[in-house]
Image (cartoon, rainbow over all chains, first blue to last red; front, side, top):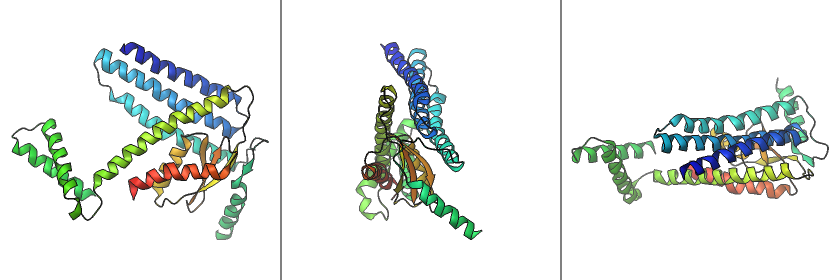
Length: 120
Length: 158
């Protein structure tokens, strides 16, 4: 019984990771690709880790806290990585997809740049 | 708040000594007893009963797990569709949160939820710029962020 549950977790994790990498190829621009990279990969890794944790806990009888810590650190790092990559991509002027509908940041960005120059 | 936790730990410790047993189980029972005592005496406390915050935090975590799964289903549905029928865009989301770590928490949660990715802050940290994968209705998207996560975070920290 427990092996079925563990396998389901690990299979879901593997499928999510595969779909995530598929998404990285399919999306048209940097920002869309980051969506696929930050979301699917996060839940995929977490799902695999829960499966492994359950396996060691129930089948082997070991409580391995490191797997739970891995989940915590993935939670902490994935959004930060996504944030930094998209921010620097925007800063160096990577174009958005031509079918993008709006860009609230473009005008505000000019304002911030002007403020910074007048201050310095 | 810290004072209440100290009182609670002290009660648990006293309970453990009264029972003449020094183990984690008695300490845990004592802690629960302390929680009840603090709960019934909450009228005399200067600050809000601290455990209400813990409950709010648990609620925030549950909301977050629910949203995380929803986000993944959303993204996978877009990936698997033969035609990419999406309208991405960057929207500015104003926030009422004040301290820096609250805003950090909000932007982290935004990144991990349906179709949104926080990508820039205004210099005064009052506005988060969010890249959304599909924005047919801008106001609705802003509303959703403000009513779910911002509200839950305010519950925990105020």
